[in-house]
Amino acid sequence: MKPGKKRVKNPGQRVTLKFLAEYLELSPTTVSVVLTDAPLASTIAKQTKARILDAVEKFQYRPNVFARYLQAKRTYSIAVLVPEIGDEFSAMLISGMESELAEAKFNYFVESHGFAPEQVENYPDVLMDRQVEGMIFMNTPLRKEMPVPVVAISDITKAPGVTRVLIDNYHVMLAGIGHLKHLGHRRIAFFKRPRKQRRCGSTVGGRQEGFV
Image (tube, rainbow, N blue to C red; front, top):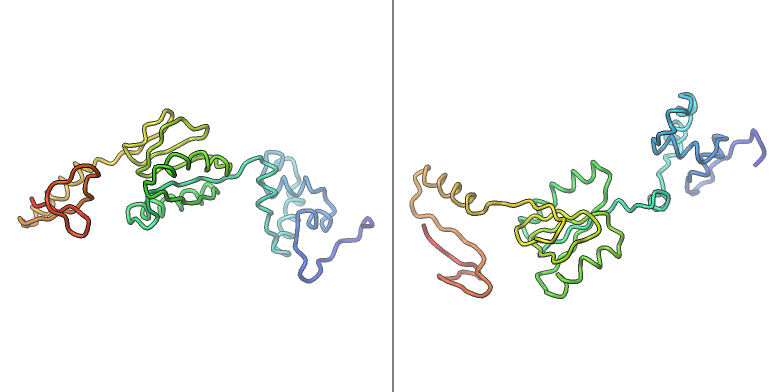
């Protein structure tokens, strides 16, 4: 392109970083530094920054996510491993994680194992093959240390280096029953999953039933 001749966007043409640089008659590095707010951005004139941002708005430029990953050598991806995706408890926690991860500009994906022994054993390595930068385990065992940070929401993930978030179900149950009794209720039913090896009491719909 000849000096002083700005590039014009053709209909249907994808706006790239190179296109913006040529349109603004700047180097792609300068444009990239401003758009990523890199430390060097503080050395670029305010007028130049304003021109770049105006061009971004004019052409509705969207950065190439894969190019960002390659340049930074990062994936910004977190894996969430759960027994069942449709589980209400897991869904509630995932909803909270989603907002926090989005704010930190991280992507996430969810995998379920259904407590299948082979999947529970193999999933950590499979997730590492996908270049994740961290893992969140919900009620999922982990038997070995991983090279990325792991947060476990359960008391069954006891591998080295795991940050665990424990929920005291016993005290939660007592608090709930205490609240119901305070309201005047005396016949209180509770339901829980049956134990795998040993079951006691009656079951209703695959769940154990008890009375206080």
